Image 1 (cartoon, rainbow, N blue to C red):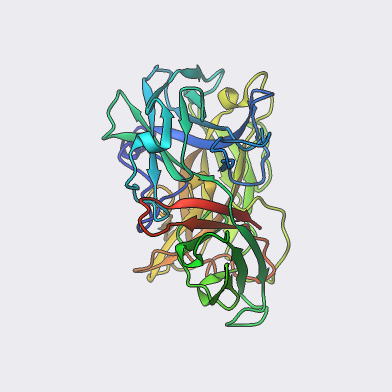
Image 2 (image 1 turned 45 degrees about the horizontal axis):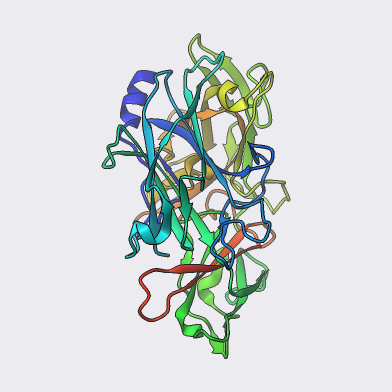
Length: 429
């Protein structure tokens, strides 16, 4: 069964939702494709960062200008599931706000080479599942960025650009606007119930027109429920105001569930048991119930994860095990009007066959089995009604106004005659 799964997974790629792109896309050939901040001084990645990474461009066009050494370099890493040495290359593409390629050439947004080889790799050490860990930092001396906006970094093997093994989407912001926002639970559709509403204002420079700006808002890094180009309630001089914009009403949802596979010897948080079948480790998550209770506060990281493992001597990225993780969501009957997914950063917040659950009539539950690297992982159960592209948590997790969520506001500038969307504001709350 393990060999059959690996063969099938080679053809699976977490597809884009609608016209927009997920933050990370990986095929079955590689796993644990991650993007983290890179600390230049310590030459290590930030492993406990609470926010999703982005780059900042100064007024002089330099990344990390004004002495900012924190968010001007990224580390991209992934695992290829063997000890064979493979030849990987990456290239960079500038995107508009809707995820489509912009009309500018690579010479207008890249300073240096347009492609680079990935030469930093290490084989896993003392692991039951063999893998090779690849990594590189970006931007670097050979490839630098000249334009603000959205980017796709595409990774491919053997110089075959038509068969990418992974894509990383990130943003470069050149701040020139002032953004203020707050979340209220007394929404325009109900009072302190299931929803949260974003009120915000964007102040733009005097020499520009407010109508040339637009926004995109994401909740917890999700793409399926993002709000793209909502209309402001009114424009006052150099300020766009969104005060009673019903498009900016989101489900409050619930705090993420989480599990910990830090150890291969004992069951961590929310793990029922750890077993080993002479070839693979298996971690069975304690059976989950559909949430019908009142809101209860839980500490979470809004869907993110951390690779971590006990008894590692040098580098957790090459010493952590891969485990078959088994999810079970108890349900007396399957829902015939939609599908259930396991959502979170560990599945790139996508809705695909990789994280879609199946129903077991004998055990009366939805189930999913997936190969996941050791660590602490947030997850939720998402229900997608038939014909819909957006998941809802109201049927599986419940939705509460008290839930702590991360909202990211992207502000784009596209004056008349411009050939691309420039990202001029990024605000997280």
